[in-house]
Image (cartoon, rainbow, N blue to C red):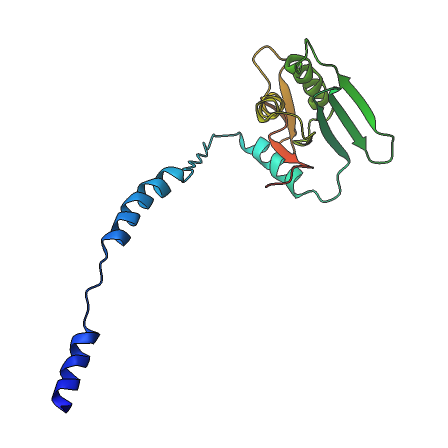
Length: 183
């Protein structure tokens, strides 16, 4: 009787596990998960900048107490406002109105070029877009702030080692977002 009980227990404890439904589920989920992943490819293009210009940009980045701060407020209803905050003086505001319902990028570029001529050692601009401004508009305004075009008057910075002026096409390559919160 005891032998019969042991055989019965062994037969009861061995059973087959059907994994086919589990494999079917994995076959369906793996392609879905692979297709739902956002593949992002970031590319940095290193370009050569004259050594005095690179030094001036690095010095501007290292400044903790700035003499001049430039802010670009972007609003879909009001247009672009450039705020120039100089240490010890009032904030100056330059307003660029909308042109036919969209941002006047050329006028903004012209004003920024004038600011760069006035403040050649400033390479940083703080962008303050409102929530309703599209990403495309923000990028267009950032791009216009970074480089001078061929049609612009040449920009110069002073090389402190040789006391010579060095020509550059960089206006405000350091763009900082002041009020953008990631989600």
